[in-house]
Length: 222
Ligand SMILES: C[S@@+](CC[C@H](N)C(=O)[O-])C[C@H]1O[C@@H](n2cnc3c(N)ncnc32)[C@H](O)[C@@H]1O
Image (tube, rainbow, N blue to C red; front, side, top):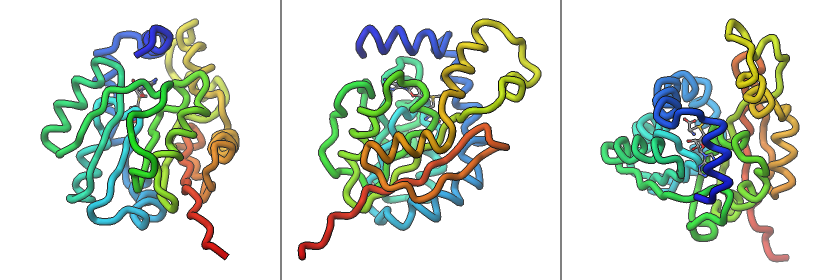
């Protein structure tokens, strides 16, 4: 991990252990039936029985178990760099036959071109100050015709973001990071990186969005 990634993540996550625990506790609410409905529509059809899924910024591995339950024979790779997340993800990986790669998403990924049938970026893009190189890498490792799912915070009024929480400097900083992009902005970033945008789905009253993407298939020779 580069010093600038460590600095950025430490500022955003605060206590690494506590944040890893929070991500694990909230996973079932985020990867709920709505998520799996989008998955069934846009990702599952691109994923062969023994295909490969890469979960970029997998955190503590909250996606692994429900994914394994739906796809018993796929290869599952999680990429992560934050030490507490890596520890938790490795503990989960043993039970679900996942492989964990320690890698900084700000750098080129240690994965081959077109090696994945599906790529997920769940609540990750907002954590990168400059996410376009990561999106290009996600496209590179996805095979033509493969599916990608971006799931993230999107712009909302400060009042709804704060809800009942204490409004302080720390919360305002998180607001800046979580609420930078509209759903269309996220789709635009993905499109600029080379993805085909298939659908933009608002989640939880517009607090989050899922963007269903595909790597365009190679054109037939004429
Ligand atoms: C909000 S958490 C989401 C975790 C998981 N995807 C989920 O939805 O439960 C974002 C994750 O992205 C990881 N991440 C952010 N920047 C990263 C980077 N430069 N390299 C590797 N992982 C990164 C963080 O460490 C964290 O685990």
